[in-house]
Image (cartoon, rainbow, N blue to C red; front, top):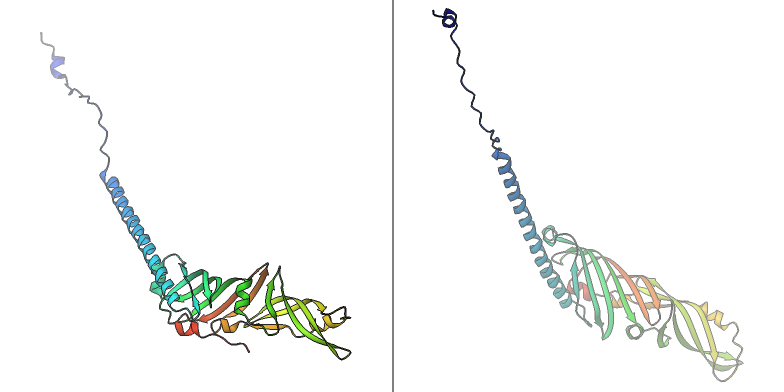
Length: 279
């Protein structure tokens, strides 16, 4: 006997599920490719920046040497020596393209002025690259020893030159005083403070030591009279380019430091040789 229930409801056969090991999904290639592109771009930028830095260093060295040679060639008569130049600012190339160098520092530790040695440091701001236009501002510091000071200045009435002490200078003057119609030679030793006054250095007396040759003489009141006289003025403009003024002076034992300032100063040969004059 046939089982009709089986015929009416045939057995359904389901496909067997094939189990395979899971494979990881492939990573997208676009992000990795973009990363490589950015690495290449950064490398190129770094390379270009390195080349610009190297080029700027080379140009800076050449420019410093050229400026030094030009300044040495245009030093005024009686002045000679080697000048070291340092160009400030971030990029010399960029400054050169603008036509003006931001800052130039000059150093001449063994500059000779009429044979007298000086230590000179100068800081220039706003320097034109062609030297045809004036610089915006100049600050200078000059250091000289006692022998150089006495060689470069001539002060009327001072015998034996100046002696540089701690914060003051000393010098001697010889005068005659009539005592009972008898002329008596007097040696006056003056201690003074030097004061910067633009085109001159003023020696303001702060003390006087008076001695008389040939015996003891009553000199009371003479010291006060000498101190009360007009201070001695030393002209320095004749040793400086036109427009340079003395702004500060400091004296130590055997040495003096002088600060000077100028604006709109030209660095060409004619301008540097054109010295000032005291009024």
